[in-house]
Image (cartoon, helix red, strand yellow):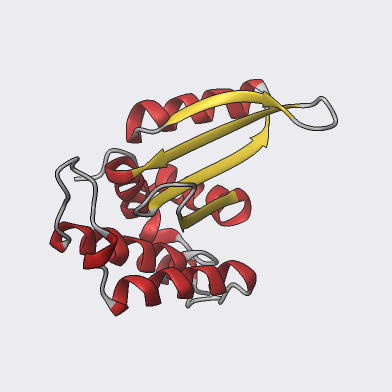
Length: 155
């Protein structure tokens, strides 16, 4: 069952298609992490939206200053929270749909990877599919593909 109304999910997906990012990143970790992020200029409306979304779907948000000194708000989620967010938006995504689908597939493959004594996923367990998914998501970030419009949006 969805945590948000269809209207809210469609709005979030549109916002994310325009301003968001989804990817699989290493950032110094042995095993990459899937991350969903939206960065936007801070305003009372954006602050309220990010608070609502983080309370409803998870993740965290914080303010930071841009190089120009303008307040930016960033909402970010990884792991299970990122999966929840992508699943909520997926029916409405247009520009980032394929990236989201690939990231969800990558996340589902993690359950089949053995963990070391420290609980971390072992890179030696990666399959060709793990690597192919990461490569394809990076390619789509450079050149997004317009997927079919959801039926609700077709004329």
